[in-house]
Length: 163
Image (cartoon, rainbow, N blue to C red; front, side, top):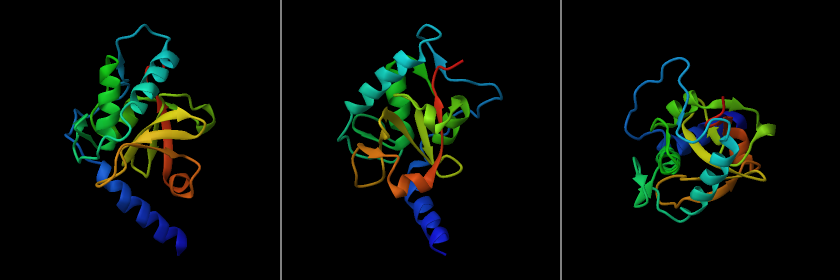
């Protein structure tokens, strides 16, 4: 019963981030478009992690995709767009276009997804931490994958620009 209740709580709290303007439905085989040279996802990832850190404290805004306010997928979309990387706008679509990576293979800049389907997304920083725009009334912040809340809700990760 506790697990069911916890799952319901996690789903309801994360559902605020599932929105944003709809993007084109990804086609099979779609991948994020990276304008940087191929084979450099680690460099792009490090730059994305640094750019996400620079946005700490920006307020949450449903559908937000600029520094006046972000929702979770808008934060990811904005950070990568600043680096010349084209990603879909919604978390579920973002998950579909990144190359899956295991939790033990996470590198800075990887996208981490929560709930299922992917209702929430953040940008991995390293050492178990990630940046995300959590929900209404909160600011962009750092959280840990190792907290019980995010351990329960973890739904996978993906790398932008990986072959």
